[in-house]
Length: 309
Image 1 (cartoon, rainbow, N blue to C red):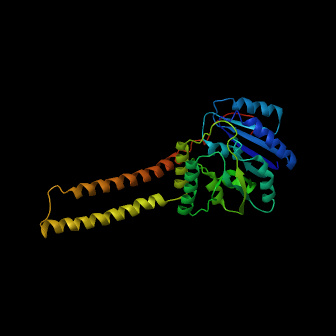
Image 2 (image 1 turned 120 degrees about the vertical axis):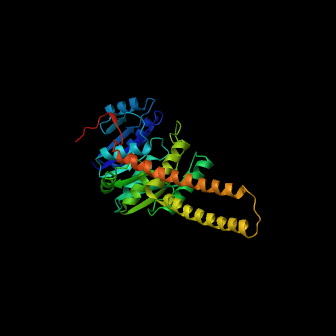
Image 3 (image 1 turned 135 degrees about the vertical axis):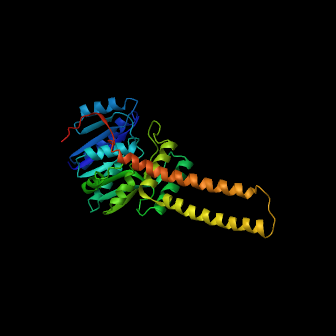
């Protein structure tokens, strides 16, 4: 198998057939032995029905149906687990990432790179807030991690079999694939493209999911929040010591004090707030450790036409 295309699907009934049509034209031009793996991530529309129809009509189409919604990154991971291609492309089903870029990615890969990711020059159809928060997050993440995560990129990329083998060795439950791929190293580069607006339907990435995704990236590849808790503890201790000296001076030297001093309440509230923040940060890390220790399966397959080896 020369090329595998991994497509996570969540309520994309209006986009699947058009995506397949455009992929079919591109893959015909490439003339490679290929497979297209669709992962139905708990869709509640007719996505699965359409995927089954395509699988009957085209033997290169494979599908994996989850028992429920496990999330975009887990769906891509399932595709990685089951793909056979020497080169693997990850692309979303909403047609924001144009399939016509795949030959450009493939040609670049053949120059000797292990990963070629698509960097966005522009993002059509997205609001200012989403663009701003995404830009801010990835630059913040780049500052607090030792991993050089590419800026202005999503999961749309091509990678060779060595990267796939590395990803299969990463069993963590909270997947953040673009950082995992960057962490793996090897020779990586990019091509630029203009990202289209969503063809039809609504995005499955709500702000709640985006926040959770951001937390996965931060806790998975940075210990800065834990360092913040430690540094905040030292700072608060220093401020408390200074306030204590001033309180002793006011009590025994200047005799200028009021019983039930307001600053005492402020100090208690300040210290309490820092403690709660620190406990919350530590709890977030412990929660994720606990999830991984349980060793539950990353996903559950309800139905598939892929024959296991």
